[in-house]
Structure formats: structure tokens, C-alpha cells
Image 1 (cartoon, helix red, strand yellow):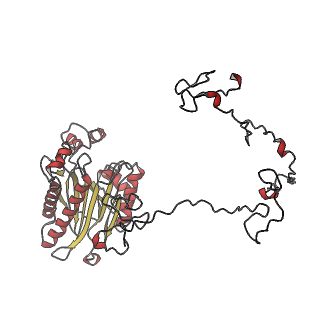
Image 2: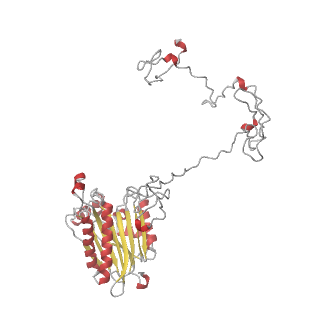
Image 3: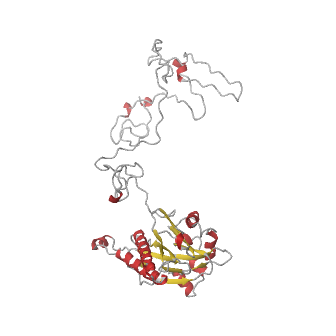
Length: 449
């Protein structure tokens, strides 16, 4: 009896490990002699390439002869299952007077089995939307703020960005943004490492009191160590852009308008920190929302830049034989080391503390110190306004000039796309935002609305 018992390594009832010779499981008392012996299995293929034995009951079957190809180039003949005589489960031949299927039918004549089963679909249809949730989504007005899922095209999107019907997460609108406005353009991208885009931009154009055109570009970079950096950059860029487009047509000098726009942006970011006391109780160690800012105003004769933080503006002349220039100075640890003569620029920016900023917009800032500067270039060019997500891959003015397309002054959107692509090709370790603004501003006829 013992010799006929199957050798088990574990109890089939409780999976307790067993030893050789055990008749009962020591854990649950299961009778191991009741386990049936494993059947004689005849696998179709064997791992060592041996041919499996043919069962005796199959030896008497009149197997059809497979024609052998005349040469190696002739494809082999393939026999179908219907080429064999059918039998029932007892081995009795099937009746031959079974009705034949109609001509052209996919049903096999010998067995009546269909071989045209449709393939499984690659994608299954989504569940129909709950009429209580997604009633009349297509007729909802845009003014109601109703968003329809990009996946099922029927469910509504909840405030957290998920479809209430199929649960699909919706793509964030700010993951990649592009805007072309007449002669200037801007592009912003989430990059390849960050889970969201914490950059933002604003571009615009207006007419000065003397009829001359003015182009405005503002780029902001949210401080990742602060709470809601994406909200901070969006609020700052929008407020600064609005302030510039409101002040310039009133006759305010562009440099003064830039200074006031930065202050207005600072107030907008500070207001984000005005949250209920209960919110602070849940996150007492979080910093207030914060961001950096860099902006540019271009007129037919004047170029003005303003900034707080380490976002930058570069001057790239159309004639590349003329030298390019960086128009801003970083509010950063590295810049302070260089200014104090303690390190060379290369040494400072190679340090891990290089990008620690010393100035920013936010309620936690030490003090607000807007920087502004005015220039009167003597030749045409473009102003590249960008976050460190770009200039990390083209830090010097000469390096930036090498990657700016030669036709940037007439193809600003394409140029901004190329610059963002350069950062992504370099690794895309940060959010990337860049605006390309031509100088001088084109004649008034080229400025729409």
C-alpha cells in the first residue's frame, strides 16, 4: 500500500510540507492514501524532442497520406481536421446522412463545426454611461463648464480629472501648451521627469498711445518645494500679462509698467497663501505658493526685461556674426558666489547648490526686489524668454544662439517648438517653457486686435 501511494511534497488540503512516508498530514490530518495516483499523461510535445508514443486505439485509424513536397521550395500541404473521419465519444462513426450545410457556409461538412469564429476584439466597448450622471452631455453648454471624457466620449469629467463613467484619467491641459499670437509665440511642456507642469506663460500685444505696437511675454516657473507651485506660476503670469497690457496703452513707460506688473504678480501669488487655518493644521510645514518670473516688452525702438528668480531672457541677433547676450542676472546661490568673486561661473553652476534661488514671488519671500532693465538694440533679433528647464541645456548666450533657428524672427512658434524639443532631447529633467519675441516689433499693420 505504501509503495502505491503517490509521493507528495505538500498536503493537497492545507499545503503543509510533507515528508516521505507520511500517510496522514501532520497539520490537518488529511488521509494521503485517498489521493488518486496521477494519470499517465502523453504530452503533445516533449522538451527533449522525442516523439510521443501513439495510443493503441489510434493505430487503427485510417490516417490520410500527406503528399510530400517535391523540393524544399514547394510549400508543404496542410490537412484540415475535417479531412479525418469523425467519431463520437464511443468511437462509433458519425452518420453519413447528416444534412449538408448550404454552399459557401463556413460550417464543416463532416462535423457541422464552425471554423469561422470571429477573432476577439482588441478593445472592448466601454460601459454605457449612467443616464443619471451623463444625461445629455453633448447638449450641455460650454458656459456650464461641462467636460466630456476623451476616452468614452460620453461620461462627464469630475473636478479631480476622472471620467464619472469609465474612470479614465483625463490629460492635463497644462502638460503641453502652445500659443502663437501674431509675431510672437510661446510653448510650455511638462518635460520627461515631472508628474505635472508647474510652468506658465502669458503672451499679448497692444498699441501704444503713439500708435506703435508693443509685444508682451511673461514666463513663470513654480517653486517645486512650495505648495501649489502650478497655481502660483499661473496666477503670476496671468496677472503680470494683464497689468502690462493695461498700462502700456495708457502711456506708462514700458520699464515702469514692467516694475508694476511684477508687483501685481507678487500680490496675486501672495493671495494664494490666504487659506483657512485648518489647511495649515494638516500641512504645517509646507511653504506658501511661490514662483519665479521673467518678462519682456518689445516696441519698435525699445526692449525691456524684468525678472525675479532664475528664469532668464536672452538676446539673439538675426545676424549671427553679432554677439548674443544674456539680459538677466539670476537671483540664485550660484550668481551670488560669482558676484562675490568666490567662484568662477563654471564652478558655481557645477555646485549642487547652484539652483537654490534667493529671490521669488510668494508670501514666504524675504523681500520683493523686482529687477528691470531697458535696451536699445541697433539691429534686429529675437528675445528668448525662458525657464531653467531650457537654459539648463544651453546656459551661455553663445550656446543659446546655437540652438535658436535662423528664421526665429519670422517663425516664432516653430522656433519655440525647436527649443523645447532641444531640452526634451537633452533629458527633459524639468518643466520647459520658452517665448520667442522678435525685435523690433513689427509695424502696426501686423498687429491684430
